[in-house]
Image 1 (cartoon, rainbow, N blue to C red):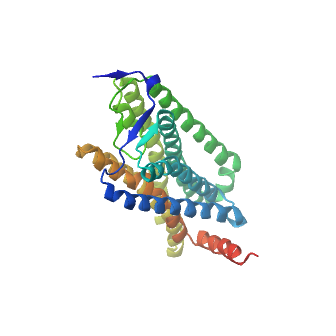
Image 2: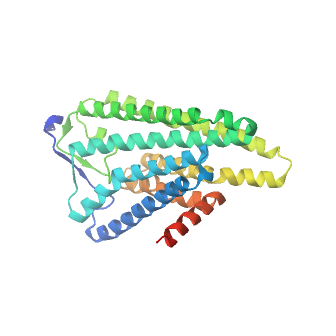
Image 3: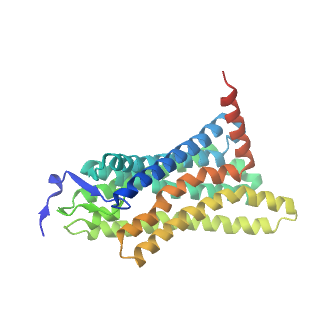
Amino acid sequence: MNYRNHTTISEFLLLGLTDDPALQPLIFSLFLSMYLVTILGNLLIILAIYSDSHLHTPMYFFLSNLSFNDICLRTTTVPKMLVNIQSQDQSISYTCCLSQVCFVLVFTILENFLLARMAFDRYVAICHPLRYTVIMNPLLYVSPLQSSLLISTMDAFLHSLLVLRLSFCTDLEIPHFFCELAEVIELACSDTLINNILVFVAACVFASFPLSGIIFSYIHIVSSVLRMPSSEGKHKAFCTCGSQLSVVFLFYGTGFGVYISSVITDSPRKSAVASVMYSVVTQMLNPFIYSLRNKDMKEALRKFIGRIAFSP
């Protein structure tokens, strides 16, 4: 097998979801539509929260950051895919590929932390309402977010450095629509043991810990809600948590589905198609889930859109 040192590699090839030319215009239109809906929907949520002083609370602070994170995550991958389809060029430069790997890791890990922090916020609000303002003061919800961003960046940077030390073969085709860390590592001809160990450890830590925190929070939330004497109070509490719980199920459910599909199928293309649900559709649906199931959010969006429509 022919080896090439990583310093001489100029580009990888992104094979995308299909090699059928007849389907390329359909895929382009579909992904462009989903990308624009993702950007517009999440941007509306950010602007509505910013413009409404009633929503300047920890819960909506995390929601606005989640929306911004979703915009960044999709902007990291989808535009390059659209450019490649339009230009009928599957190549992506070595530097751009590693940048995609790094930024996808940063924003994916940060999404895990944000969902965990949002679950903790609902836990404090429902289980310890009298202590909510003390526990969720700006120092205790802004600082952990900054720490989460730092941890995510450090982990992504470490993975990127370890990829830089790899040597690659002449076959540099990635059966995906963006540069995914696992797919890039599989192309290497040099020893990837350290890379694979780090991927396994990081996946266990940055997926299991936030998920455990979310499960812990919602076990206590459900227990507290069931003990409420008022049916109206129960309904209000479940409505408050329903949106966030739907997003959690969507994020981790589709992620688990991608993992299962990669295990049971030998076709990388089928795994790439399955990952579209996890990596594109989830971020597109988040704004609809939060706006349709949250009365305060719907009211803020109505006021914001009304101000835009009637502004001179």
